[in-house]
Amino acid sequence: MRIGLSYDLKSAVADRHAPDDALEEYDSPETVAIIAGALEKKGHQVVKLGGGIEFLDNIRRESVDIVFNISEGRGDFRSREAQVPSVLEMLDIPYTGSDPLCLTVCLDKVAAKRLVASVGIPTPRWLTVEDELEMERLDWQGFPFPAIVKPAYEGSSKGIRLTSLVESAPQTEEEITRILKNYQQPVMVEEFISGDEVTVGIIGNSPPKLVGMMRILPKKKEQRFVYSVEVKRDYLNLVEYESPVQLPVPVLDKLEQYSLKAFKVLGCRDFSRVDFRIGRDDTPYFLEINPLPGLGSYSDLIIMALKLGWTHDDVIGAVLDAALQRYPQCVSV
Ligand SMILES: Nc1ncnc2c1ncn2[C@@H]1O[C@H](COP(=O)(O)OP(=O)(O)OP(=O)(O)O)[C@@H](O)[C@H]1O
Ligand SMILES: [Mg+2]
Image (cartoon, rainbow, N blue to C red; front, side, top):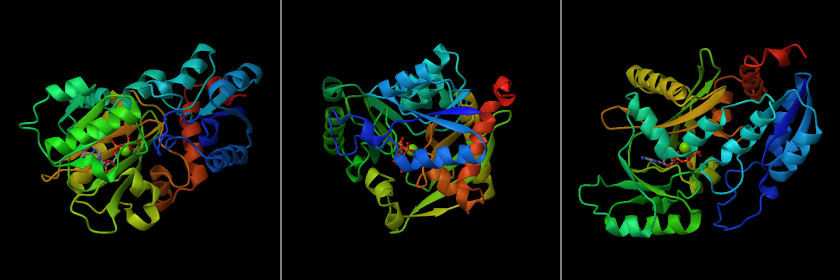
């Protein structure tokens, strides 16, 4: 098959507002090379389409059977991950991964939380602040501190720093102001769940199956761990990854059940990674789901898969195979 590869490289995206993590979500040439290599090893021809206007030019010029999409999209919009899939749907070109509605709903953490809560998946209490005026009107009495303050439409822990964990109203307001100013989007203030952090990988469709689970443990035993942007950048020194996860079976069962249920209610396809924190009562709380999780060597899904005996190429191949089940016309090419 002739497979197009859509992606947004850090180097290709103009740095408009420039907090230092502005490009955190975008990919590196190494990740693109790994995915292209994995597809070529399966006998496919790979056409690099890039992102943004370059992608639009290339997709009009090239003829491809399917697009392997890892594009994060451009701008601060909550629908940015839907940009490339929307164009592909307009042109009737098959692609891997979730559709525009799913990608948009999942990038908007509040929308995703509302949907998962509607099917009984526990998620921490939160409130959303749209602007400074709304912040000034808020009364923090009764809010369950400690809390975490985070942008509503980001990934890769963009905007989530060590200062994001707050204990009081003034601290919270300072963080809200920082995020409103730097990230041009609503801010979530969410109850902090202090227990273990577990991320769950899923691949496939009918039925979707777990790749596995991975616990993220701080090397320095902190009382309140945050997998912040600082920690993700220095993960080799600051965290240990445990997979398979050594937690009681009932907790693992709930993690599996909630992950698959979230994948389904949010309409995810082909693959996803779901993030949880475990509460004091052993309840896993849904934080967010990533229907376009990183596929680079240092991404959580790949670290987990390698620990569980997959190769990096296996993961890329499994995502493609899941997508191809939707498009039988491609398989006979
Ligand atoms: N309510 C919470 N309670 C405890 N920790 C939290 C909470 N919300 C976020 N965190 C911490 O902050 C980290 C990043 O939060 P979150 O997963 O929402 O952000 P993200 O930028 O979407 O991450 P990703 O890199 O997975 O896309 C979490 O992995 C967790 O360590
Ligand atoms: Mg996350």
